[in-house]
Length: 233
Image (cartoon, one colour):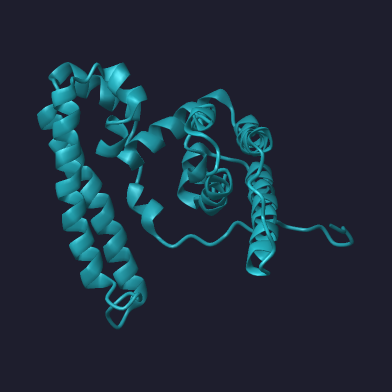
């Protein structure tokens, strides 16, 4: 689901008891990456599949805007029932997953691991696969926090008053994207010093061939749905 849509659902489902929220598990695949042109190119998605993805995301945005308009109008919005919210998210995710082949789904996971870097390593699923010790997890988190502080300082330099600084905003955006990608690669190097040789080999094997992650930090246009002449929606 589009990230903002997912966040909205999280807010509207926020009144659920913690025991109930545990039933809502994270998606198996990093589907939020599918709208990126670089990811679509890497996965070799056909134009028809790209259009179907655009349609799924456009429909999700429409549902989001409908809910937001009710909130902005001051109407009382009751929390979405658990079953309804979970069904919505699962249907959205299942629709996207069904558009991908087995090899494309596997590759999407690899790209997701590269995009997450050290932050993906500390997820329970990864700590279990790599058999990370509590000490390793602590050190990975410390390394991540240190690099994130450095990145925040750089972002503050490039984004002063909420807008990219410099005479050429596009150049500044490219610099920021490159810096974010570099930060992830540096954190990957930090992680390699914390993991054992066996763990590093397993981790790199799970990430597959190198993906240009800097493309994930550049401004992305919303996918547009092509409407055939004479069709009505």
